[in-house]
Image 1 (cartoon, one colour):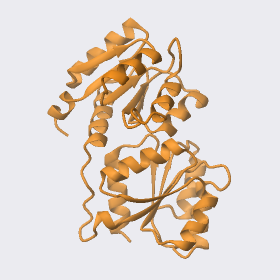
Image 2: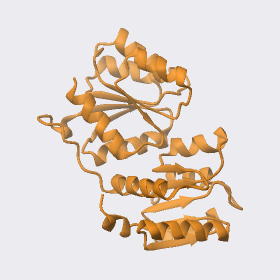
Image 3: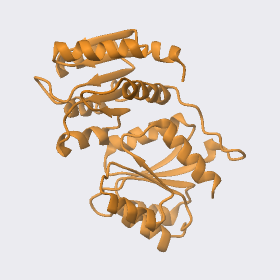
Length: 266
């Protein structure tokens, strides 16, 4: 990803603190961002977006009128704003605040304060997501791949579909839970499965165990996309036969490489 591509990004920074805003804008300039606007709260940010659609929104968590979680959810529920990339910069670690942001599909969640290299990597990931390269799978035709995406969050499924579409994968079937995915796997053939870990009826581990032990597609590659932080749970998933694990939020390059490895090892 070239410096020029970063310089073309139009960024909207949503930050109520003048001091923090100056710090972040200075870091954006150092990273090569030259086109940006600012907003001090969620309402003014939404008003700005309705007039000038940015490539990326960078937001703090706590604002006078709403949280960053509420802002990104409003964006994802808007037909006009749902595809705008979103990045959170916050010292907040509470699960109830952070997890909705992860599930909504974001390019990065950075701590406050952050290091310059962290911001630059997040900006590169944003540029990759906006202008992704198609998968290179040797003799396989990417446009022919059929993928099952399993996640109880509609916004997360939309984000995963967007990333897959950017990689050239357009034939995507959705399921909102592992239990919903099971009959689909019995009826249709898929080239690989992308599933969340935490789901209400049948979680990702149980779905994986069903696929490996009982389904008609026992050897199908399975990519787990998750915000799960319990290493014991992730170790159990690995033992159950997952093909790859990717964090939420995930980087387009990481997803591309995991899929390439999964499909060429089949």
